[in-house]
Length: 418
Ligand code: ATP
Image (tube, rainbow, N blue to C red; front, side):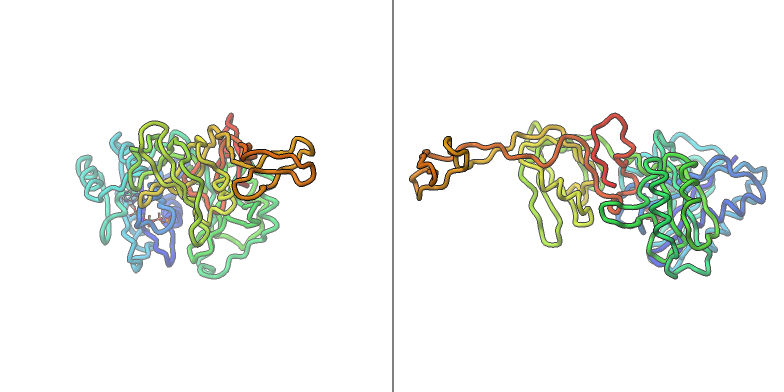
């Protein structure tokens, strides 16, 4: 039995590490049997040099010809990597036994930004076979994928286009996609974005992926696939994945949040959210004790989620989830734990007619024109709250691969974005 991990073979211009792995598996089936489902492993979403979603792939092959398997794997990497991409640095790792240290490395690769030297030290210490190209960075993802053990997982079915159609517009019957969603949600999710009336399961780039269906198990994915009408695909592969699990999120205090890490932080809204040009919203969150604080952001692509953020008032206790980039936590979701009693100063209500009084002039209190009632100054009035306690999330079109969608959160008060 050998475990093969691969990463960083594609570029912004084309190809895809999962497609390469899918082709590699098909070729290796000639000399062995792929055991279980391949792992689609998402790593730290905050690493700057990822092409798209920081994905790596690993799978286990039962074979009595490991040397030949390595050769086939290497030949596939050489053939299907986009070496022209400035940011393509392929890594390939083969392990006959997976040392426990690799699982620790996987966990660190979710939370930290690691150096390729560390990956090489581990490879050497355990005498693992590997091949790497250019700046060799792909070894980090390949090694982490080999070591990945999931405490929670979901599934994704990826359908790959026939090579002749790469780079051409995808032919997908959208109506059939909505039907597939209606049939399989909530066992599948993020196929469509209802609020934004968009099909979101297909990329628009020139890569080989036709579409991806995400869900709780292989069966609903297959059910959705049968419903979807589209151009013919070369192959479809189901992966077991850490997507949709919050594997990247660490529970921490605001003072502990470090650059490029992803956290769940509890705090008190210090000020209402302020917009900047482009429709991005920012608000400061301070610790319940002590004086540490962090800026939180809901960027324009988070669309209707910003309405929830705009409704927050100073004093609301919330828990935010997201990655810290340049000192700001980019919101993926949040839990409104306790709403503050929002109060505002307003003109008093007339005891005669029940309407709000008007100012009688500067420094002269308030009066009711109809009844002639007078009052001295403003009174405190409750601000009606537009949000409730519970979880809120960004819409499917803005979801991070690793983010656990609310549809998967059982026993919590959730407001899923669909
Ligand atoms: P795609 O999703 O299309 O496969 P990608 O977004 O996965 O592309 P890659 O081309 O795989 O992007 O680039 C990510 C690079 O970052 C790889 O070289 C990988 O080894 C490396 N990497 C992954 N996680 C970390 C980490 N925690 N620290 C440092 N480097 C990392």
